[in-house]
Length: 260
Length: 210
Ligand SMILES: Nc1ncnc2c1ncn2[C@@H]1O[C@H](COP(=O)(O)OP(=O)(O)OP(=O)(O)O)[C@@H](O)[C@H]1O
Ligand SMILES: [Mg+2]
Picture 1 (cartoon, rainbow over the protein chains, first blue to last red):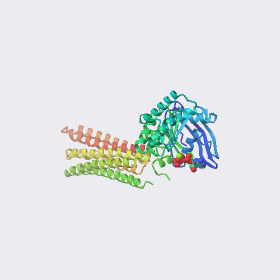
Picture 2: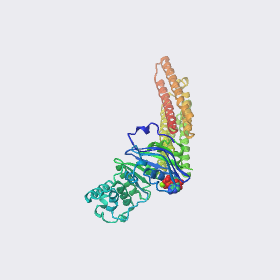
Picture 3: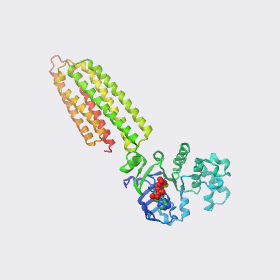
Picture 4: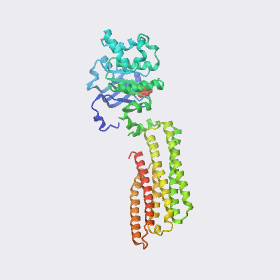
């Protein structure tokens, strides 16, 4: 891949770093020698055609591929310098939270959705939980819309609200990194832009890695953009650079829609 | 892939070529007017210059519509951005051609215009305009570089005109400096056209990441 020259070292700190990361699903080599440093308090977008390994890469970052039958992983992933292999999976997943494409609230009240993670991690005092629920919903910019119906089912919310609820749920366990896999692709433009605004706000406190098929979205909100193709990281650079002067012809072909 | 967009980019290219041709035409008309002392041509040059400005507007509109419809990125975006820039240079060349035309009546009777290499400057300017536009539509960085280097020749010609004019004013029995000053102004406008062509060539290099 085209390495990001000196910029790579310019960042004060990267939160997640992968070193020669390879992943196989049985015989299928889905990730090849991925070396990537994800900077703190930035939004990093992962783009690339369907099947290039974006979701696979995202899932390896909180070890969600571990349970899949036949998966083999080589190389190293570190979270703030610590190999994630050495972390308890539940602890890792609270530090690196995931929000999926389709909002997936649990079939319980709004309150219980948010309190779910903290309860698992041992928080049981009502006052403490109340506080977590309120701050998380506020951070996800959905508090005003649901503060009067915390005890009603989360399934009654709109798609956009459900997605922000899922973000609030991820925030409730105080993560350092938020992973989002096409989290706005099922939403209308207004709900999408609410989530984009929210992410821009959240990056002040969290590090965000998002998969998106929407080039405009990557250009709008991502600081860094990584282009994947057939399991390889082709180019990874500042977003403006990728969308104005991409270094690799394959990146150019993909983002200008002349792919294949 | 993206057939419609590709066709529109092709149209943008041919519009740029067309505008370049109009600029060359304007310069040729300057040369004819200088040589033939035909007053009528000056109105014609004004029209050509106005048409160049209209063409600029049309191409600018085309660029906007491409941006809105296609949300171009990378090379496509740079091409459209480059087009929006070079049409400003070409529009200025059109204005310069009319600036020249406006002065021509004042030097019509002067022998000076045949004694200095002013027509060579006009030739050099029209060469630079057509070649710089060619380098853009052919994405030819070598040619763009040649044009940038060629601008020095035009600057040298300007210095030659200047030296000859000074000599002529000194030698003039009636000490009449005004035709010399008018010739200098014409030379300066041709020199400016060279600068605008050089600017077009520089945009081409930037477009090509060089
Ligand atoms: N559980 C699995 N078992 C076997 N192969 C898998 C599995 N998950 C993904 N793959 C394969 O790995 C490759 C990468 O898939 P992945 O889902 O990471 O792609 P993606 O870039 O997220 O695509 P999309 O944009 O369509 O979501 C694909 O070839 C896919 O078929
Ligand atoms: Mg995916």
